[in-house]
Length: 248
Ligand code: NAP
Image 1 (tube, rainbow, N blue to C red):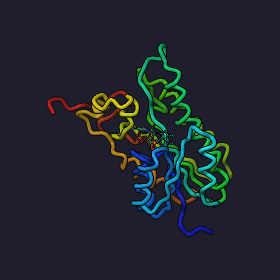
Image 2 (cartoon, rainbow, N blue to C red):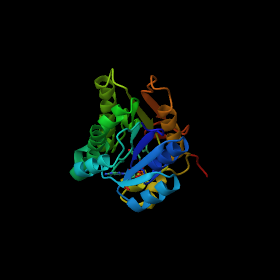
Image 3 (spheres, helix red, strand yellow):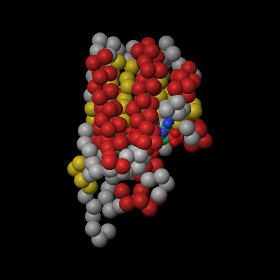
Image 4 (cartoon, rainbow, N blue to C red):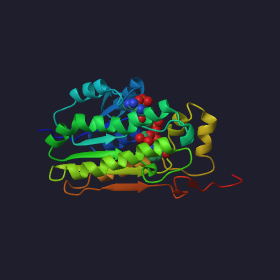
């Protein structure tokens, strides 16, 4: 029987995943961190006495190897790995970009859930926390590849609650609005000037704001399921409606 609770955070080499790994460690969890950039992952893991393991959620063999290295009981799985690639109209959609977004945000999340379900159930209080987005229930021009993927995440979260009814399993979806991370840098393929414009003259959330919500949901009593948390900056009313201060 484990004494410390075990948490897994996918995509914890930066942004929301990193902040979540740090916040869960501060809350007393032993954290296993997974991502592709192992150097960054190792540095974060060393800081929080966690364990860094290579993980590419788009690769079935990588997910299985990651799962095989975990303890027999896992309490929390934070499915965070993912993001957006590109911003183009549906009529000209880029197949590689859409496939990559579905691979990480949707299939990756499903692969991780399948691989860890047994370990989560064995803990007696398993909890899957999916990092969705306001893009999971809103749309915006040019965003269909990403919004469709995050709408799928929402469908999976809701389905899991139905399929696991009666099992000692909780399912939470955390849906952030604008968070300042490497998200836009990745979306715009390393174009820092274009990425900076997304956060210009407005006050976005920090990754830590989202991590707070994850820890709060995870630390409710075992019979309390937080279905969904939507968290936006006060400067945002909808995915594509952001207040920007002029003359700043
Ligand atoms: P980020 O800083 O770019 O972080 C993305 C993380 O996902 C990185 O650690 C990256 O690590 C990991 N990742 C990407 N593909 C992966 C793969 N195939 N296998 C394993 N790990 C992978 O962006 P972020 O904003 O923190 O994004 C985290 C999550 O929040 C995403 O699901 C995103 O859709 C969601 N979200 C973000 C915002 C926002 O405004 N920032 C809003 C709502 C939701 P490696 O590259 O090292 O693998």
